[in-house]
Length: 93
Image (cartoon, one colour):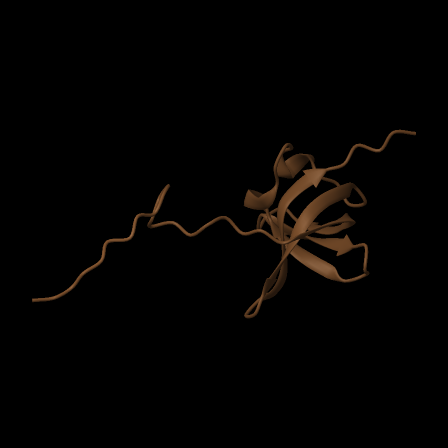
């Protein structure tokens, strides 16, 4: 006889929780449209990778080099820092 305990998980148990990191801002440094990714120069000076799927509130093809964005930095031990939840910031002058 085995003692099994069922754990209740809400949502979709087969999917991990969406990544969350520390919020920061930066400017888009490079965009590689053919591969669907780019790099953001963060406020601390380092470049952070982002994928087209991480862009929210705008279309990937509407992004331009130099645009100011807000995002969350996810520290991945294997591939390095990655930007998640990338949003264009509208600068008012």
